[in-house]
Length: 301
Length: 331
Picture 1 (cartoon, rainbow over the protein chains, first blue to last red):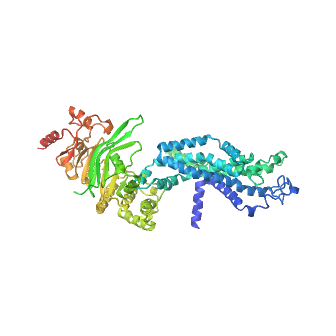
Picture 2: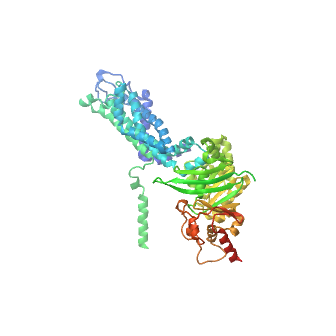
């Protein structure tokens, strides 16, 4: 009981108000995605032509799309593909990128040179272009898009890991661990990686947001998620609805994408230790007042 | 005579420079240490004391190359395979660093730091390792060890953290302890206590020790023999009891003379003129010649060798003349 409370307090302190808000939003979206069959009011793929382009009502809280599918339900189920894709992309790139980055930073020299240049090379390839190329080779679908973006995202994450790990590598405590007889694996994984974890997690959250946008773009182009699977990116691309003036059809998934990316970016920045905007302005208020006091006292004396 | 625990034979360390050249940091260091013996390594900054310790643990910078041999119980450390090296570092040698704050991972609790080697390398059950850690913490004079085990390094003072580091070395029960200026970062009042603990526990366990310091008196207090280093070379080596009376090298004499005395009040403290040089800065002759008040033209050109003199080893061309002159003055 007490520990729950203190954990909550520490979390609150570490993330700040904007970070907590972002976390809350993401938890809601994640719960909706996991519990979609329970919370969605209707079957996302059940069409009813009588309800085509129906406005918000008791039957359809956010209205229905062009073939009468419930918009809210499609948004809720869409959260599944929209979150799963980026999660896979970030997960796979971390799985490949972290070991490479740790190896490079540990051995330095030519090992580091080769790994760093390979990262630079992949970094120079636009991720979307790589994805389009993969789709051209293997046909459209979520899997080729995820594979291509996973590769494209490796340097985005691994370069940060490498830089942070290099900084730890030259710390005296790493030498001290080596003299205690510990090997490379133990020192890099249990000490270095652990100490740079906030940076890695923060960068991963930011990458997650970008990956979500990239997948949405690909789906928008018809290259990743295929109809009728509900997906936010696909729903934004429903140009038919837009042209006919049913803006809510397009705006709702668009807002969800923007909010999710925003929440992830804010959360990622907080986790990696960046202070919220206004931190410097807000914090010293007391100090400023104290200083004022001191000057008056000084003047009086 | 028993086989030496540690033997340095012609240990030379060069470090590559940016422009493709190389600089000599250690130049032919010969030392032997018997099991259970304590040896002091004394010198100014840049004299090569710390580089010697780094070479003994093979913890040299990437750009450095070592020649000669560092034999631990007869086996050359410099050519050991990775597995042997880890074993040697785990149970053969323990290193007490100068600045414990920098050499202990700040994000892990003291307990985790202390038991990692036992649990990770020697597969001691965690509960038993913690019990042993608490026992050793008590031995190094830390109150309430159970509480300390749960604290982070930033929660304790520098003196206590240095004791934690000494405890971590004692826990590993190495045959050789290297103490690299273990008290330099501490308050003077704590220094004596920490050195006392290190000395006592080392004796109880029969561990050999190389004690590095720039404080000659400290070295004389805890070591059986003292080696004085200058510019990457040993210039004098003799037993601690006789160093005061029989010191023969001008540099050692300078070090002894530059200590302020509490018996006499002086207007000005004596100091060795000039600044210490590194091995690569020294000329072809004696590295100390530019600062030496006894130096002659020959000292500038002829490198002296470490030769036996008056029960010790001295690296000085004019050692006999200087000795004769000094005895004359005394008499």
